[in-house]
Image 1 (spheres, rainbow, N blue to C red):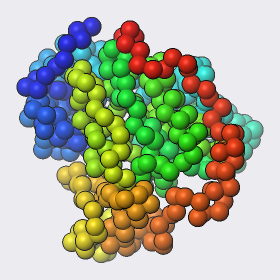
Image 2: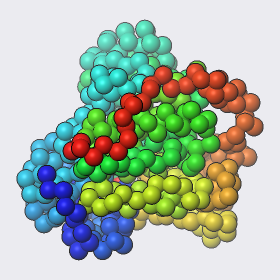
Image 3: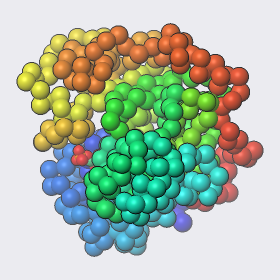
Image 4: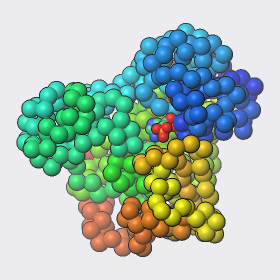
Length: 430
Ligand code: AIR
């Protein structure tokens, strides 16, 4: 592999032109790179920032090759790129992360099996290949979530089953295709960790984010996570170990659950920038988007430390679909708040259109500010998301959570013990 740096002036190609591609392209342009994108939607969000937008499906290998021919390096912002497209692009430019890692991650069942086979901690799961099989698994597991292997994101392609009677409807709603079935986990806290890794194996780990989802879609995210040190340490060891095992060059986001009995389990992986790290644009010494550019261009990785506690709230299409339109002027009166819009044309329910961010002197202050901003912007959306009351308390004020976290502090947490040698491992070529 050619390991020299790809310097500003070069062209970065991005497979996918949604909001993640757009924000990556903005960071790349700030650093002096040119950017081309490929996306099936000619009006994709990154179009406004890229100098060339190729309109083609993600399984069009010929188009991926055409993108790569005009670029010095290729990265991606969505994992649903066909293996053939990634391999075709790699004929003409380095593709980071590479086809092998993306292939494992892009199929949810394959990903879970890989994690389990490699001894990373995951909850109970099975494959269902018929409605009857699904019913039998749910009869055994109890409440479960069935997930389509391919294609679903932001809560799409998932069905929650409280008992086996729901299997026929769930099987139909997932397109009558083999799916991943996960036993429902009693979650105390949702968190995520982002790692950036260069071709020589050097990596940096961002402090974990603490996250809150509604109906499978991220609602808010805050950093630092305000969790026990033992949990943070385990999470920070887990992510680079997974990135190394996958040979990731670029970014890997690891979504985790801390269970009510103190275990840390991997939920899902993403080989790209992640919604739970949008606050890095404000809160961190290096944003995740700049970090991706540095990693794939083989530049020194940026400092991942939090320089100001920060939080974000997602703005879904619903915000624009209520009777009352968002009050941007009122919202931006909240101190240290900022509005980010992705320039998407069609507001649809559940579609990520933008986010609000805020920084503060503490995680609690940042979260309280961004939620206040959201309530001002769209009281109806805040009500629908259960966010119209006082902000959630990140520290002990919530009695139940503090009991659960006390159990974690006593050492029940994190059955997974990191490898001894997960320091920078320069000899490993990803
Ligand atoms: N994305 C990728 N995987 C998960 C998410 N949320 C981002 C990418 C992708 C965009 O969502 O940036 O391009 C697609 O958004 P939409 O609203 O057009 O479906």
